[in-house]
Image (cartoon, rainbow, N blue to C red; front, side):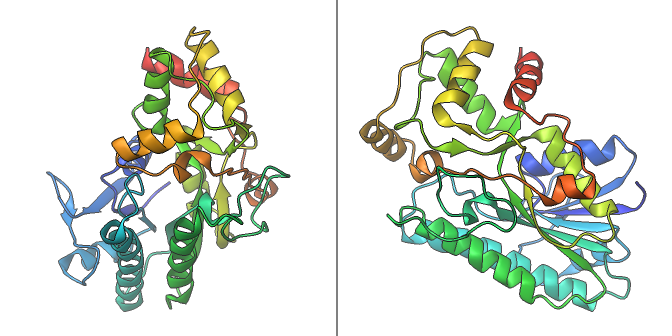
Length: 307
């Protein structure tokens, strides 16, 4: 791949994955971040500024900006979570619209959480979106819906747009996998809640490869699920993780234990309890091949890399 890739909000875990992936191919990568380090470009994710010059002639812009949802959903955090996604998407749309040589494609983050909680067949890109009957995930779905609506409304006629409904990304270098690995090693890697809830995931390498594939596929636009073909119930996923780490036993966490733990860790149980059974039909139909299509193959690589 040739050209320049601009990663808005690219200093987090997913941004680092993409930086390494594209840099290894000799692609110029520009990171827009609120706290720039050497070689990075400052922006606030809200207002136009000198950073907009980086978009001129870019091969692609990938927007990863947004306050982490790993927090308590009190009023202030809800506002920050929502605003950080909506405003960064809006200002990128404004900047792209002003470009003399606009980026060829704009990939904007979304989330697989937009789909309805289910224990039934997996949702693909045509799946049913919305909050579950108990409305435990209402805020997350509201954020995802507003985020995609803002993206869809951006007027960028010369720039192809793709919304990335991303599942849990597994990487040995950060994110959720090191947390699950640590729990299992401490003997706490049992089922969470009743263990029936599905966990959709994608290996970090496949996430990066899929982003590259989407950038290069000139006919691909709209929503896409970045999720491996093999989502698993929580109890089974944790069992396989314990086996890979040679930890035969793992204490389960009941719903009330999760509530207490989430409060202590300043996070929300919805991140664990919601059943996200999501796959992609559009990626395989377009010819994309997962390097890690099932959890055992992904797990073997992740454990080996983290030894």
